[in-house]
Image 1 (cartoon, rainbow, N blue to C red):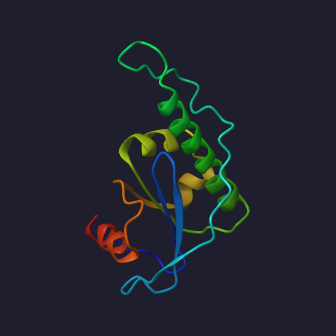
Image 2 (cartoon, rainbow, N blue to C red):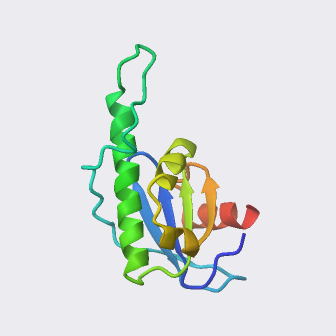
Length: 134
């Protein structure tokens, strides 16, 4: 997958959001870190009850789902305000599934691609290579 010039890349897991901006072009991407976003965890995920093996809701899973919902709110707001024209989302598989539940229709239209991988904490070169290989 190619990374369009000025695209925003969101790299997410259940606890961390890293945003990058492609200042290069499609043939030679150059990912620059964007400032950290303030992610609200007040939304308790999709509202579904995720069960742990003891049949009790897993607090850590609910926290991760709430974080994913908060990330979706941040991305939706930026898309709706015109700050994001092209978006690539890279997220841990479970987190990506939760994010998708909260995407606004406008965000879905700006989505260039998604990768179901946990790449938080990886270098920008690793991220760019993973996207190029997709």
